[in-house]
Length: 325
Image (tube, helix red, strand yellow):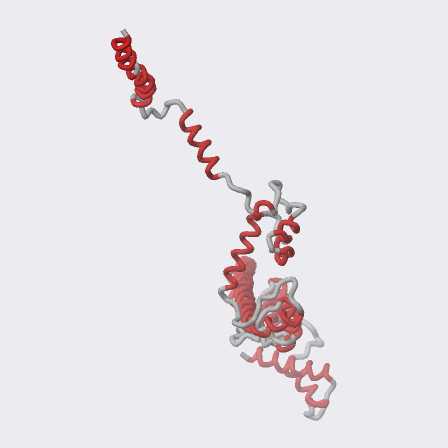
């Protein structure tokens, strides 16, 4: 009995031990890669990933709050990590992004460092700042700047007083001579372009105004436009307008002025050659007679005559010349 039952018990024991293994694996082996499958496995993976990547928060994130400001204990954090010399620098920035950008700028600037000279910071002494500025080309004083551009645009005058004010600003900002010269040249170039554009605008406006005035006078004078214009321009020269002067020409182009000049020219012509052969004015004196009278009065020494008579003599001679043309 004992020998027959013992093999039976020992032979049946292995069969049940393999059953649990087979009941769990089929479900996993037949699982489909369906995108809509249960998210439980991925959640467990995500949880494991978060657990594996979870590390102590770095100091740069401890320095700032989530609301975007410095942590109250930022100075303690810097001191504990041996970075107390960065206290003033960190205080300039309101968040971690700003601090990183500032660090990037510093790295870029470091590539341009002056050999043997430290870039000054908030804690630098005046001597260190002066040594650095000298190394990068900042003049010793504001008056030592040379700002006048090599190519000063035509028509522009150099203002030494204004240049002195700019020199003070440049020296206070620590601008080198080379940088100041470039700024000065750029300023003069930009100003020159602005003046050129302004002149072009003024020129276009003047041409438009002149065309409008001409159109008005052609309409007013009609078929007599050409002859009236000659008479008015001749009279303008007689009364002293300088036709080579831009301001005088602008005045002469005014329709009211042209009408006055034409009226005076016609009145003189009518006085010289009155209708019906009789003088329009019994006291009329021709330009030649007037000029001769003034000349004889001063025995030919017009230069010693009173200023008003000198002008009257010159105007009479001009009118005499115009009538003889």
